[in-house]
Amino acid sequence: MRTIGGLWRWRHNPLRRTSDLVEAWLALVTLLLILVAAPVIGSLVGRVAEDALQQAAREQQATRHLVTATVVRKLDRSPLDGDPETSSGRDLRSRVLADWTAPDGTAQHGTALAALNSPQRGDHFAMWTDAHGRMVARPLDSATATTHAVLAGFGAALLTAGALEGGRRVIVWRMVRRRYARWDRAWEKAGPDWGRTGTGS
Image (tube, rainbow, N blue to C red; front, side, top):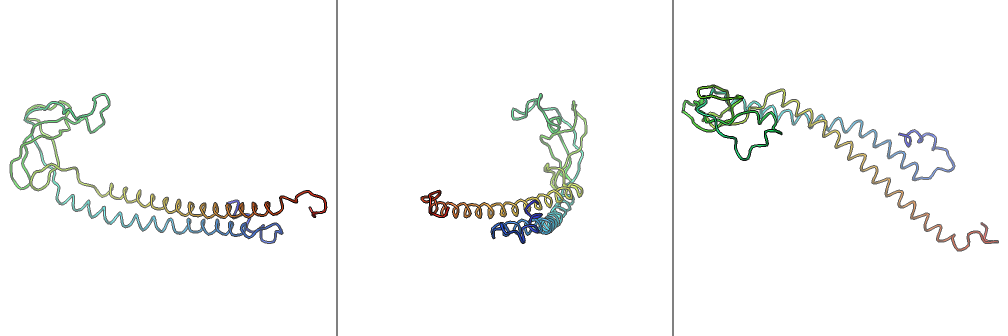
């Protein structure tokens, strides 16, 4: 911003170098692109993500069904389960052997995770299955899909802004390197005679 603010002051400054003006204009153009392009790209990405996620949510809600299962018996904790002292909310569910009826009417029997603290034989719990009774994850809901789409759009906008600013910094870095290289060449020419009487220094 200081570079952009100095753009006006540099216009008629006799000490102004061409690279100074280029650097200031580059900063201004980058800022304008960040203010315009980043929101546009973020909006487009968010819209595309929203459409895709809402479609996925509708498909999952149409093909996944909530059924009621009956506990046959509680199973021991799997050796792969996490330490109870560091368990998350997911680990609070109990592993049980259960019976349930699939949406297509077939009887199912198998291991499931029940949201019960102390499951007993005959207890009932809800679980999600596909049409054939195979256990599946809870379907994506519309609100969660929208949240993910907003995050995707916001992330795309940030990445765009970061890429633009990164490109500007690379260009400025190369300009500074060329400037230093010109100074080095100038010093090499003036160095041997610098400060000597009669050399015009």
